[in-house]
Image 1: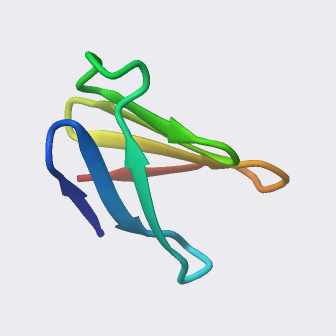
Image 2: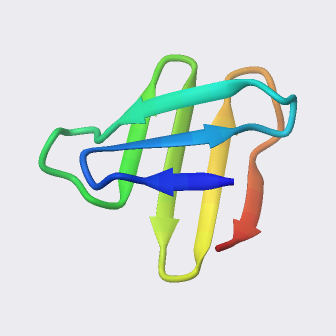
Length: 60
């Protein structure tokens, strides 16, 4: 689940962790991240990355 609040997103990752990611850079509206996480939104797809784990691609 992803809650997009424009300048940040909140999500529950596949491990069940609650994560809040700021836009990166701050003016960005499709890329969010904070070490060790990253999220890229593209149309109806989302690519979630966490250091040390395989990237997860899902549809919104």
